[in-house]
Image 1: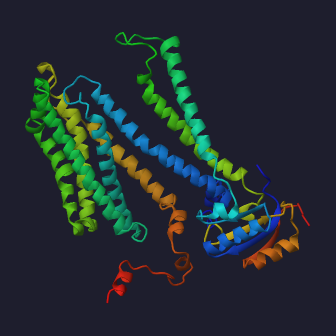
Image 2: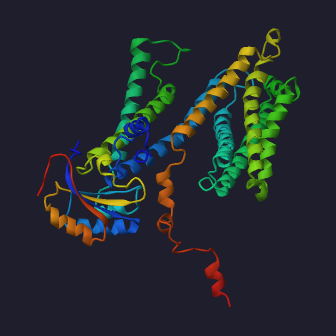
Image 3: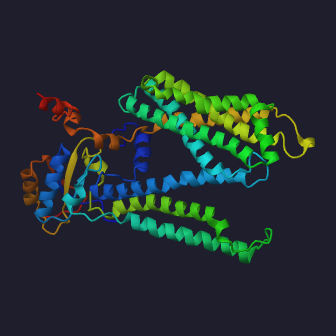
Length: 183
Length: 283
């Protein structure tokens, strides 16, 4: 996980469309370590920020496949090798009888796994940010906050601050959090 | 909620439970993907759960349980009673907690339509069972179903059929679908009817099985009542705790569909009145 204690510049927008336009401009200006902190997922923001589609569904698919294989392996092992029982002369390795458990385990692995992975991925894929409680952006309320991290290759504090002001952002702040300084 | 909490314990609790959420759009992207995937997984889960519960009955040899219609019948019954329960709780939330702006009459009306549709499907399933009992020519099957409707437990069958298949028919009338009291009473009756559906399936099939020596009448014991009352108590305790401690409406989703200008206290910029343009165009 990327460090949370870092510095950068914050600027607030009050309408989702303004935030979308700003995101596109930030990307066109060549910034890479930037993010938009929003109260809800803004449609079109992925394109504006130049983000690829989330890879979480692929992880879900892999976990679902794992669940199917695990369930089949478990049931075949138990019913054929470990404790074979004769049910009216039916074959021991009868996959149709294993379908309910296979389905349930597929859903169990896929659902719990995707929920956890989505949370972890959301933390991992983000750019370095200061702890939210330390800066209180208001992005969980009604603001759309642009954050440019000082870890960006083209970072220069004054230039970044001026750039964010030019975008029309309100409440522009330079944040210096805990130790690290970038000039 | 986390950012507005003032009580230190609450702040700690909400802080831990939000896993350091900042609203980063890079995180929202994964959140939305996972949301979609979970919805896609939950839908077939409804079908599988109720299908397998019904298999517990259908794989037995007892007439009245041993029917192939059970999986779809149980799935529809679950959706039906689920919607009824949700209507009951939502009416309560709207009335008692004043959430009429979040849970609108349009939501309630749509729920009523689904309730009526699934009610008719359940009624169709009841009728199909009778048709199959006659059409199969099976003596046992025929006896069980005649006994179910007109035997000692005919009153339970009558309650079930009335509450589930007939009462929801009031929703053909729009005024009924938009009347909160009607919705509340009908949803309660549907809950009663669905409880009696289980009662009919379990009790009326068992009380006349193949051996007349094991015939009998079912009488509720104190412990049966205690389990029933206790499960109601457990449900409502947890429900009220949820209402008290956690956000009952996903606020981020409400924000997402709000007009941002209105959200900022401004006027509505574009008001779309359906048909307005049409009227202007006419001379």
